[in-house]
Length: 191
Image (cartoon, rainbow, N blue to C red; front, side, top):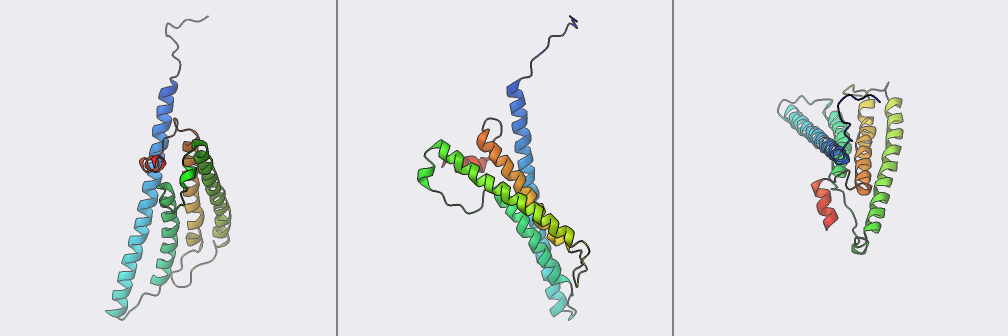
């Protein structure tokens, strides 16, 4: 009816697929980078605070009243960020049964069960951890005066990161052409 002189080009599915693959791969790489570096920063803070506390206590005979408490809370964040980083990189311990690796459909079913359980567990941790953090908004730690919602928030924060990674890995299991697994995941899948 109306001719604008321009031909209508169909959207290239392969171009769209490549774009989705690049975006999802970049997103999971950023998630891994965020988790790893945040956990490393928490570990560095623990080491620095502990070193300063030892020097203050034994050299200057003036111990910090807050150091143990802050290190404990940083350790909580370290554990949950480290768990998310380990999940993204598939560094958790696993039992591999060789006879399950022979059939592709069994392998895919096992991965679906694994990531489905991770999604359910992460969702429960988000729900309950958020409730715990909100319940402790008014409470402060005894010596450092930190709002207790901050250490409690490590649970839902780590669970959100694990949830995102589990959804990505589940999608990569069922859409191998659309979402690409990280190089480490490919090596494990090939073994």
